[in-house]
Every structure is written in C-alpha cells, then in structure tokens.
Length: 216
Ligand code: DX5
Ligand code: ZN
Image (cartoon, rainbow, N blue to C red; front, side):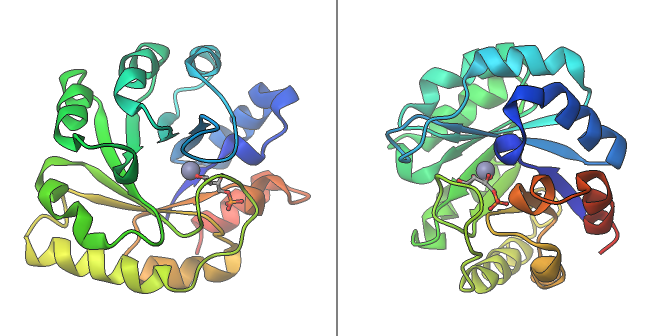
C-alpha cells in the first residue's frame, strides 16, 4: 500500500525532522494540505513553506489545494517544488483550464471530490487527469472520523475507471480518517494510495506506524 503522510498533523516547529522521519520510514508521497480559510474553515500553509521543504527531501510532494482560487496558485506551487497538484472540483467552473495549466508545467494533476459531491461530476475529466483524491472526511481538519459511505465511492470509481479502460492511468488516493484498522478495507475497495495524518503523527512512534501501514 502506498502511503502519503499528511504533515498537517506534524509538529510544525520541527517540520524538517518530521519530513526526514517520513522519508526514512519509507513514505511514498508527502501530503501537503493547503487551506485558504474560505473553501474550508481553516488556514494552513502557502508556497513559501513548500519552498523551504523542497530542498530538504526528494519525497514526491503531493499538494492538496483546498482553496477557492486554485488556478492562481498553480504556478507559485510549481515554482516552490510541487510534484502533484490536486484541486477541488467544487471550487472551480473551469477544471479543464486548470488541468491544462498544471500539465503545461509537466506536473501530475489530480482532482479532489468532497464526500457529498456525486462522483459522476468527475466524468468529463477522467481521461484528462492522473489522480483522483477521494475525500473520506469533510475537508478542513485532521483527526476526523472516516465516513463509511466512502468505501462504496472508492469501489464505484475503481469500477468506472476499469470500464473506461483507464484504471492503470488514474491513481486513486483516499484522504481523511484513515487508520491502521480501516486501511485493509480501503485498499481492497480499490485505493492505490492512502493519506494519513493523525494516525501517524499522533502516535508514540510515527516511524514504526508508517512501516505498519506499508505492511498492510
Ligand atoms: C483534511 C486533509 C487531510 C487531513 C488528514 O482536510 O485534507 O489530508 O490532514 O488527516 P487525518 O488522517 O488525521 O484525517
Ligand atoms: Zn489532504
């Protein structure tokens, strides 16, 4: 199982240490939650923080934009070192333009979908993107409970991509409320990558916890 620790739950006063720990524990992606206080009721980090993280790690930087103006933030995050940029389908009227913009920088592009948004909203874009970020909590905070209906949504998207013959082209990433106890269920439903924040950083030994996730 591929694992993307979310640094939102890390100790921000020691981000360098947290990132080094993730890398040595074998994390695949580093998940960067960007919140603007508008799209979600929380405010986190901007490109300036990513710029200081980039030289400290060669982990794949997975930027999750929970903002109302993703198109204006694509270039600043690309310049800061993002490898993947995921924006929310609920935040924009012109997903195609933003997909084109991210691809014009040769970066991986993802679209995220909130728990209550119908998965069919993604239909026009499935053949144009590299990754779907399925939110299994309402975006905005770490430490929330996994929404059980998410399992069915993962299965439906997995099936839809298989029917379209593009399952190998599109990565399914699941974000929110992931624990060691529900990872097997999420994996068997079709997830390729899981994001985990509190389930890693709020444990006594985050390094060992990442290893446990990797071995599920
Ligand atoms: C929530 C974020 C998640 C969050 C995950 O809006 O997008 O990435 O940090 O944290 P946990 O794993 O604690 O739910
Ligand atoms: Zn996230």
